[in-house]
Amino acid sequence: MKKYNRVFVVVMDSLGVGAMPDSEKFGDIGVNTLSHISEAVDTFTIPNLQKLGMANITPLKQVEAVSDPMGLYGKLSEKSNGKDTMTGHWEMMGLHVTKPFQTFTDTGFPPELIRELEEKTGHKVIGNKSASGTEILDELAEEEIATGHMIVYTSADSVLQICGNEETFDLKELYRCCEIAREITMKDEWKVGRVIARPYVGKKKGEFVRTSNRHDYALKPFGPTVLNALKDAGFDVISVGKINDIFVGEGITESNRSKSSVHGMEQTIEIAGRDFNGICFTNLVDFDALWGHRRNPQGYAEEIEKFDVNLGKLLDVLRDDDLLIITADHGNDPTYTGTDHTREKVPFLAYAKKMEHKGELPEKDTFAVIGATIAENFGIQMPEGCIGTSILNELQ
Image (tube, rainbow, N blue to C red):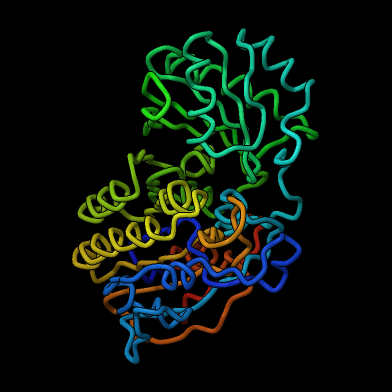
């Protein structure tokens, strides 16, 4: 018998709350995305997150911990070997990733891969290095527009990214090239977690702006997840943001693309006004893409404040038989060196109007408690091979 008719899982992409015990192995020492954002800015106003217990999880300079939180708060550690989007989200839904995805941060992609990509797409590749998305456009976009060449670059993540000007390169052509790149990078030695189409507009340096027509071509999950089990049992699995891309549509019954994290929350609020039976799984990527990787704590703080406003609206429309879970998939400390994700624990906030247990939850050793809890709530079996133990009894 299900305890909650609807479960909302909202992922504040990259909002870590402190280093994992093994973070030094990943090159991350003393990281704490949320605390360091708070320390770096003058003002930080998040009343709704505060009421849920966010400042109880990790110290915040401007925000006091509360003695009577609205729900339950705690931390989750990552069991999988990684600190990227796919690893974090897949683990939430039961998959234990033991082998990290390939990265090409230091060397760029191998000549053999580039040669094959050029032959199959018909475009000469320029770039082929690790770079920020805005810097690579300032450096090479004018050349791409003039020649029809194709900007290919990577980052500290396991990604192959291709830029294309929507007016001169054409969006359909960009997507075609990315599909070819995805096929090529299925080889074990070249296997990246995602190929990402990065469309942009503008005609000269200083005017280039990436658009919301980004598309991620992710690896298919290596096994069934809780999402598959929910869908197979006839429940709704509604995705918002890049969730559908992360799971390559596996287990998704309805997909909603978002233009921004603010838009993603607006979509989630709209979905909360509908009748459905199952889960709404939302990823809000701007924290990570716009502010974490660009090492901008002020922008990150302001994005959290925007989220908090819409969180208040979502709390207002939740029904008596709804459960809300707020979490993250990894860290991306904007005060740390480099531009990479950071290996961190993530927050776990849970709220329901009928919830009687409130306060601190003991720290959990895997993100997979989320999927396991959802599975028990809806009375479905966890797929074979999935990890995670339900904490539903603690969320009553």
